[in-house]
Length: 89
Image (cartoon, rainbow, N blue to C red; front, side, top):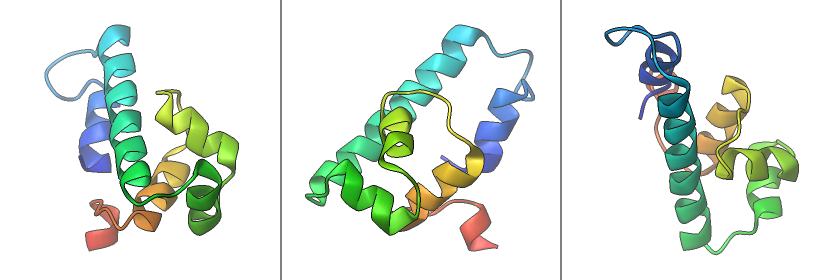
């Protein structure tokens, strides 16, 4: 999912205001996808954090569906070789 889509979703630009429940569901699902990819590679959270240049606590927060800064999400996605809209520009 591109970060542009995420920002539109977060800002309620996809057809009305986004509910808190939808925002939470998106973050939880996104975090689960990141965790699945990390585990598929056989990496610990600390391994991903080191490769992404973020803290293990930030990786953990993302995987648990908590808010992390867009820059942190982007670094984690790049470390996992997952494309985002910004990396294609």
